Image 1 (cartoon, rainbow, N blue to C red):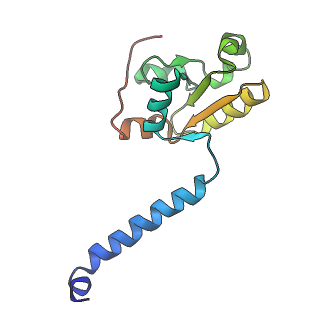
Image 2: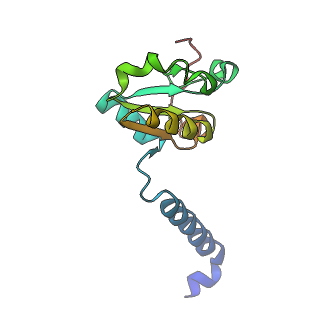
Length: 138
């Protein structure tokens, strides 16, 4: 008890971080389509998942996930034939924060894609997690 009184700020920090983790867990509970950067990497390595970056050209050129295919969200419907061969493969959608990828996920689900995932937090989380970034054109 004396330890907690003298180090109340550490206890408060632990409580707040625990609450933050629980809130994130509850918010994403049941949504298996949301992948962390580590989960996305595992899916690429284990199941040869395809990554589709739906950001605009300028954003993509500033840095993207290595080997990601670039199809801006606005062109996704028109270019969906390019993706037909991956209809039964795991497909990970990526944007800056996850919002546009969520829209792309809905479009592709309606087009009959079976294994769709959204990179939770997009490129912001990818880079924050220390994952590799490429500037090469694909």
